[in-house]
Amino acid sequence: AAMLAGRRVRGLDQTGLSQKAGPVVSDICITTSEAPASNHANSSGVDCIVAFDLLVAASDSNLVGAHRDTTVLVSAIEAVPTGEMVTHPDRSLPTTATLLERLGDVTRRDDNVILDSAALARGLVGSTATANILVLGAAVQAGAVPLPVDALERAIELNGVAVDANIAAFRWGRAWFDDPSTVDGAAGIRPAPQPKTTDELIERLGADLSDYQS
Image (cartoon, rainbow, N blue to C red; front, side, top):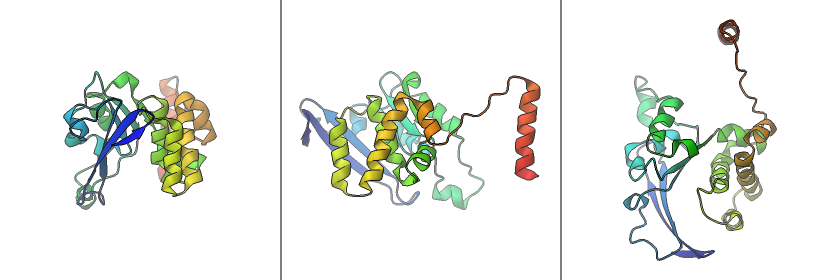
């Protein structure tokens, strides 16, 4: 266990080898007292789910230990199809709304944080490669990951990979949590227009269909 600002941090990485080129689930236990007997988060409950892929986060095995009274979800809206879905088109990817509803049933729905990290990273940093770090920044700013900001930025530096871009993404994630509309604007993300009448809705959807299929 590593000591960090009075905290003990233990981790357990679980790497899948057969689906989606090996998704990784990392259990992180952070305590201020003696480290728990197990570093498997599910054994004592989950306070926070930081999800970089909705489909993986919503799987049965990753919801064990989550509870609607104690677990906060901080998640990207990305969901990558599994290899089985790619080779069997009849097995469709669940919608974002369906996955979020499933996760919302076992988490603190009103406190959950959902962001389009890929679009934000692309617009703010120039690459979706930093999207996960942006989600981490939002989770830290939300208080869901109780580690010091300077320690996390130092960890990014020590990792030595795209340091400037990753630190920028981390800081943008923190800023997004405090002021999402301003950061969305900086990333070039514009809120979808909200039609006020049925005729306006028909006109907007008709224009969308015309653009899509001439």
